[in-house]
Length: 481
Image (tube, one colour):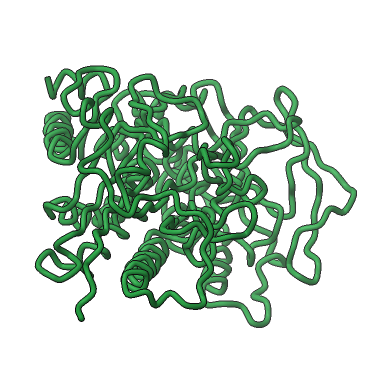
C-alpha cells in the first residue's frame, strides 16, 4: 500500500548564503515533478529588504569574485515553488529598522510544516566596558551601505589606527583604508563612503592580537593582498616570532613565509611611493582605552596554544580603536506553551541550540521540524564554502526526517514539542501578503523586485564609472512605486 504524501512547506528565516544554499539543496533534491517535490514550497524571510546577507553586506568590495555565488541564488529564485519576502523581521530582539514589517513566529507556525533558522551572526561579540571602540561590523556596514545606516569612522581625524583581531575582516578594513582613492572609486562602495575614505589622514595601522603569528586567523590570500599594496608597507617583524613550528599546517607555513618575506627591509623609496605603514603585533590583549591611548595586557601561549595573561601591561598612543573579535547570532523571541522567552537561543554561546542542525530547546529536547544552519547554528566561523556544505547537510537531514516521519520510520529519534502545522494554511501570513501591496513602511520586497533594484544599482554605478552604486530604502520605495 502506498503511503500518502505529506506536504513539505518550509519557512526559512534569513536571506544569506546559508538560507539560499539550503533552499537550493531542498529544491534540487525534490524536483518539481517528483513524488515529494509536487507538494514542496519554500518561503524565505529576510529582515533586510535586499537578499544575500553576508555576500552583499560583508564581502569586501575589492573581492567581487567571492560574490559569484549570487548567480546560484538567482537560479533558486527562478523555481516557482520558491518565494522571497524581504523587509520582514521575524521576532528579532534588537532595535528594528523603521521600515521593516514585524511579525512573530506565532504568525509563521500555522502556515508551515517546517522551519529553518539561518539568521547568521549579525551582532559583534561584547567587550568589557573599559574598552571604548568601534566594532568592525559597524565599519563593514558603513562601507557596504547596510540598512542600519551606521555613522562613518572618524578617518579624517585619525593618524594612528589600532585594529584588534587577526582575522580576515581586520585585514579587509586595513587594506581598504590604505588603498589608493583612484582604486576605491571604481569599487562597489557608496559615493559617500568613498569621500570618507579619501579624507583619511591615517598614516599607520596597528593590527593586534593576543596570540602569535602561527595562530593568526587570516588567510594567506588576505595577507598577500595587504603586503602587495603599492602605497603602504609593513613594519618588519622580529624574526624570532616567525620560526615555523613543528607540525605546522600548510596554511601556517605559507603565512609565516609571507611574513618573513614582508619583513625584509625594502630600502629607500621615493617620498610618494608609500604614504602609510602598517604592523602586525602579537601577544597583546586589550585591557582598557583612554583618550588617545590603549592599554594592553601582555600574553603568552599555554600548552594548548591558548593565550594567558602574564601580569605585565603596555600602553600605546592611538587615535582610534576598531575591534574585530568575532560576532554572534541575534537573540529572538519564540512564544511556547510554557514560556514567552526564547527556549532555542543559547545566550552563553551566542547561537541557536542544536544537534547537527536539529534545534534543541532549553531542556535538551529536539524541537520537531525546526532546524538551523550556517553561522546561526555553528557560530561565526569558516568561509562561504563552509556554510554551503553545512547548509547542504542540514537540508539533507530535513528531507530525510520528513520522509522518515511520513513513513513512520523515525525510530531512535526523540523529539519534543512540535510548533509547526501538519496541515499548513495556504500562502504566507496575512500581514506579509498585505505588505506586498504596501508603500513605504512595512513594504515587502519580492525577488523579482530585487532583480529590478539590482539592475538599477548597476546602471547608476556604470554612470559613475564603478561596479554599482547602492541605493537607500527611500530610493527603493520611490523606484518601485
